[in-house]
Length: 387
Image (cartoon, rainbow, N blue to C red):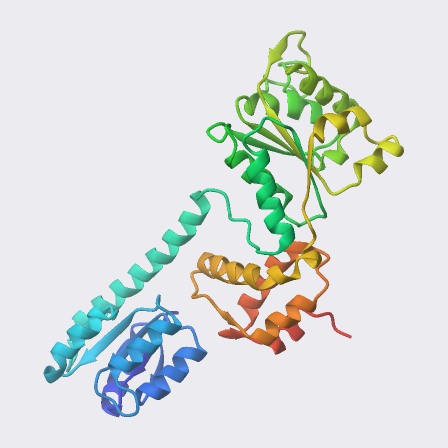
């Protein structure tokens, strides 16, 4: 149910508007002056505000200016007496959605409210769509380790060198891979991703190299593998440490000869692919344990980029939280929430075993469960482990 804040010092006007709009299915809150209205505006998320011009304590123009500083996205409609039309027009120039003359015409008012809310909804949807179809997400952070990674990406991206990205789960290895592709000479080509840990060992060869129809029981038609799909672009092999030794041997051959063979075929296919791999494992230990080929490790690790854990870049947490508050709020069609400095301090003291992924989940949880401003109480209730 859409919520509307009505701010007017005339009780009869508030009562009439509340009755009409409640009947139309809106949830209404009232304020008797601009100061009370601003307090409620700060505390709650409204879909729209109806605000009188001439009021005690804080007039409509002053309320408009302060409200726009708090949240520029909520439409504010000015209610104007006949003598205040020029002022109302000035308010529109300052960001009010529209103005309605007193006494309000019911049909015009309802149409104006509907149009304002539909426009606001479309703006929110457009922001979400832009994020979905936009280019690669920014690497957020100003800490020394992140600056070093950005500099490394700029150096290695234009080359054809293979890259091995290491780091714990959730640190953003895939994002680093995407930026290497984005800044490379192959950026116009495809970037194809394979999660080696998510594919059963008996299917990984078919996934990477494709198969011919009838090559095994469930091969009812020919399949093009990821190497072929990535031809002219980049192949990102995520969690490479979980790949079977048999598949590793075939990947090694593909890297050495720039050729692959589909399962069930005897014909080689030339491929032009830059391979970027990532792992959360210590591959040299895996080599010692005979779980990973040393020759493949050297083929993949021409350049090794280590992505630090969030605990090693705690100074980036305020920037990351700010970005997540904006992005997740936009996805939910909500205004961006504020967060107390002390609440941020608590987040910087937390042990982030799940890294960036965990932080994003925590921010999403706080957006859903907290009030308009995220406080230390919210952190203690929804983030910190109970003792």
